Image (cartoon, rainbow, N blue to C red; front, side, top):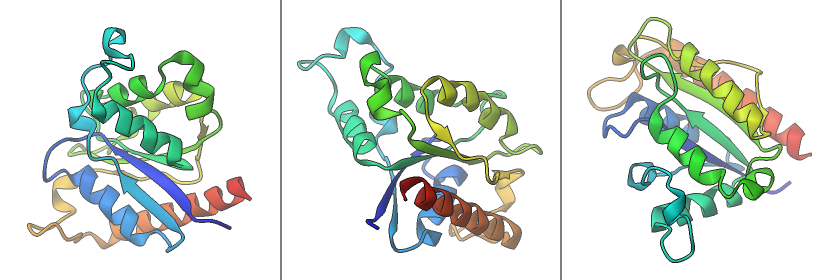
Amino acid sequence: MSDIKVLALVGSLRAASINRQIAELAAEVAPDDVTVTIFDQLGELPFYNEDIDNEADVPASVTALRAAAAEADAALVVTPEYNGSIPAVIKNAIDWLSRPSSDIKRVFGGKPFAMIGASAGGFGTILSQTAWLPVLRTLGTQVWFGARLMVSRSAGVFDESGALKDATVEEQLKKFVAGYVAFLRRFAG
């Protein structure tokens, strides 16, 4: 079996983002035959505008996103929760990836997706992850429901140096990644 490529989309642009740190840790705990690549240019994507979605005007960041999505076997949405819903930065990336609409099946059709996330609130990212479901269903993705990871009260999860200090979250993340990888292997097999 060839290596599995997972594209991670992190919905927080903050330099010290807990969600970014969780995505990096997910990449670290993934098995050697699974590569988790965090797309670093989400903050460079302009808001979707059909007027610039053409060969002459499409920004380089959009071209890079589309290439990364096409190359990936699966996706991991690492989503904070903003005002009880989806962060605009990831939704914007999905909007770019879903255009032209004739590309939806090629880019998303049946592609395995999973969601994790962290927020400062007491309920983790349950509302954000739930808000993603109709979007991912509409795009025809294969969402993995084998486990959930919604880190609540995220300020206490990492120390000042960025090291994970919450053993429970670490164990939950390892189980989540192991379950998602098993799903991806069955899916690909």
